[in-house]
Image (tube, rainbow, N blue to C red; front, side, top):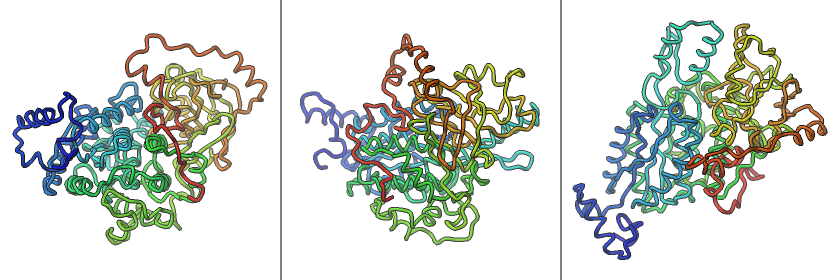
Length: 576
Ligand code: FES
């Protein structure tokens, strides 16, 4: 075993190097390892199984398959736990904990001896947290996704979390279905372990990881409970060993070319708005800044090709049957950097040449017959969002893409909860709903509350969509004319804080504008009379760290001290 490999890596400091190794070996031999095993390359396996994370419910099978793959290739697998975050079991939000998981994962990769690492993630924030960690830790790393859940069936209609969760809940709020129906559909929405069934944030990040080249080709789409998923796990373990000899560290894979490929894919799959935040955070670890204005220019010539909910009609398992992401990448080929290196040691172009031959299918459209002519996401600028805002235009209502209306303002999540369904709420279908103080700092944790429900009195009248604006996020599974990630956020002095009920707001998606139609003098007067923000009393621990160091949405909501110390590149580059 060469110096600085395997067990010799990162020795605990006792002031005597040889004693440190002697002691380490003595302890691990307590678990029954032989010297033969311990002389082999070590592949760490980040096990994110948790009783609180059903999206990772197939973790035991995946770990077993990865271990098999590692040993088939002559390595020794050693698994280790990290925290695990599930969307619905994380208070206040999973986003609040993403950076903590990234720190946990990064420091475990650094602290424990491993020559490469398999990162098993799936639920929304877990893959971004692991890729942020991998980018910073610098050890050869390969992402393995847990895979999507199966779809269920409710009275003959196919359903899956979580676009259908929202549509059925909307019907329940509008009193179109009753208590018995909503309870029945609740049993069918999540038909197995695995991640959400649609192109939500989890599926988006799986596709992004594959597009970045840090996951095996074809690794994004296999459902959690399939033999394909287990085979991918075994192959991932095998590849993790090969990456050690090849010295395939994340900085060789996560390049500007790779991030541009990932942005293309994000736009072409109708991916989650959250994907931008996570890509910005991952890129930031490597000194690369995502330029939102240039990304919007890229969106203009990147059509949506994938017909999955919420932008389309299919589910993730259908994308897998259609050939998975390689089918999308093959179609996007003229727009991609084919020289980008992947975890296989081959380039993206070489992998596409090796991919199975195309066949007739209806889930992935062609470039000349897209689902939506432009990219799924659009970046808005204007006096209401000086640092930008995002709308998922492919899942918005065409009739509301240019809309001017009266603002109906809610000061925060609590205010929204108290007044939204008040029968006396002064609100009309063409009003613009504004929710403040749900940004990275404001809530805290930037909750997915940007999907403001239609006020019940309007829902009962059949209103299905309204323009909604906030500094929060929305689930990747949600649809509607919803503007999110308004930056700077209201709790950090953004102009959103100045909006009052009765103001006029104009949204013009084709022109990429979001403007508060209040003159500058009035806005200056409102700013001058705004009380200075008060420090939150009694903040301690992780929450204090979060509060003091979290960046805004356009910078990825990472902690400022976790980003690379020098941001030297911007993507997309002009020529992208
Ligand atoms: Fe885990 Fe949707 S809740 S992926």
